[in-house]
Amino acid sequence: MKHDFREYPDREMMMMGIADRIASDLRQALQNDDRASIAVPGGTTPGPIFDTLSGVDLHWDRIDVLLTDERWVPEDSPRSNTRLLRDRFFVDKASDARLVPLYGGTETPEDSLAQLSEAVEAVLPLSVVLLGMGEDMHTASLFPGADKLDEALDPHAPALLPMRAPGAPEARITLTARVLNDAMSKHLVITGAAKREALERAVKLNDPAQAPVSAVLRDMVVHWAE
Image (cartoon, rainbow, N blue to C red; front, side, top):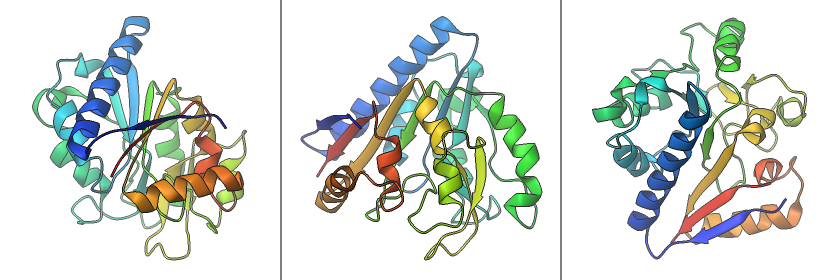
């Protein structure tokens, strides 16, 4: 479970540094293949990364972008991660990128699972994955105590699974650990003392059932700033 831990003097430098590293990873991927793919988290933390990355000169028309997970809510909901992507990623130069959706507009994620999974499978393996982590040591929608966590952690899991977890008000849909681990370049961004302590706890536990993030830390670059 070896990972590369990088500490930054402040959050602004970290966000710029991550954006620069991801841009470099994508350029490298596009040198080797016709298309590249990147999966990114929702939430507020990665917003500054998106702001910087969206202005970078890349062949965005050859890049597929998807979320690592999504809440099963309409795009106009303030809780929609897709809405965040449209507002802060698919702007400026990155407006030419192609969105691979994780929301299908049906009543439940199960009703859209086959169609969404087919589109995700078509862009695998991921060139780059950027993940976040909660203080409960979840990543993507791989939550401790979630109903399909064991299936999502299985090395032969499908690419995409619906997920319901205690404390999560909506159903979710998430990339599985297999997809996250198969990415050619893996990054985790965390901020603050509490999340650093959570990461250290996850490493010590080394039990994906209690600390799902530990299932994807191998070969991960972890970026941290206070």
